[in-house]
Structures are given as C-alpha cells and as structure tokens.
Image (tube, rainbow, N blue to C red; front, side, top):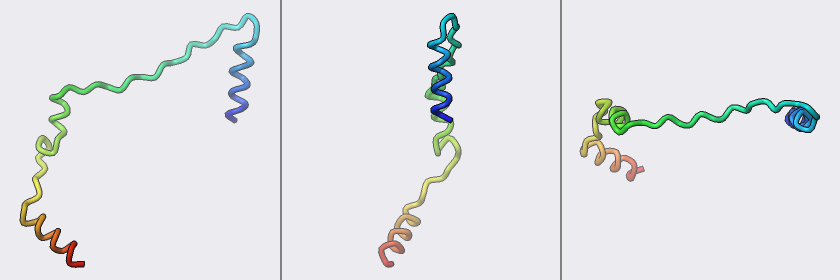
Length: 65
C-alpha cells in the first residue's frame, strides 16, 4: 500500500492545473516549567526512600546466592 500511496501523491503533483494540498506540520512537544517537573519527582509524589538497612539486606541476599 505504501507504493500505491506514493504513486498517487506523485501523480497529483505532476498533474497540470492541480493545487497541492496543505500538509499538516507536527505539533512540537509541550515544554514543561520547572515547577511542573518538581511536582512529579519522587519527593513531590511522597515516595519514600529506601532505608540503609533494606539496602544492606538486599545486597547480602544477592551476594549469597
């Protein structure tokens, strides 16, 4: 289907007296303010940090296997 569509677009451009359609441009990505970015950080969402004890226990378990 891609080749067929390409042929139709090329044929339309080459036809005498035709008006080219207006092509839509892509929308740019939304720019976020620093305040918005900080609102979605782990601290902003209330996510707790991993304790030192939990880290030591996990490392010990991973290295013992």
